[in-house]
Image 1 (cartoon, rainbow, N blue to C red):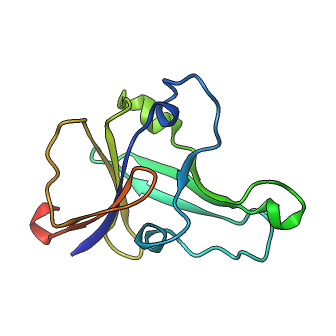
Image 2 (cartoon, rainbow, N blue to C red; image 1 turned 30 degrees about the horizontal axis):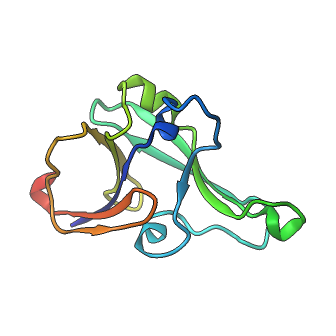
Amino acid sequence: MSKAVEKELSETDTGQARTHQAGMLIPKSGEIMEFFPKLDRTIKNPRAVIDLVDETGKDWTFNFIYYNNKFFGGTRNEYRLTGMTDFIRSFNLKAGDFIVLERVSDRYSRIRYRRQHAPLKGGPIKLGRAGWRVVEFTADDD
């Protein structure tokens, strides 16, 4: 069984709100954070590269960043996933659509999307914060 996180896209995530933000906000606690790499919170704005493959075989690179400059004299204290604009535009994703990030193995992760009313295949869904959910897929969903 592989673990995945799912995010319902907002207008801000897709650019439909015509506002600027530095990536998607990630909840600071709970099972959602367990999906992402651990970052060294003792350094300013630590980050990790996340490489994923989509269903067409195309490679995508995103950045998982902890903007923690509040602890270094600034104002921010939040986790963000950045670098997703090209992916969102490539598939013409809109608010209400979903992205699914799945860790298949330590070396292989993939990204999928589904349209607003497409049914989710897989196991139980546990509600997360900020539009994120943890999803468990069974082997026959791959």
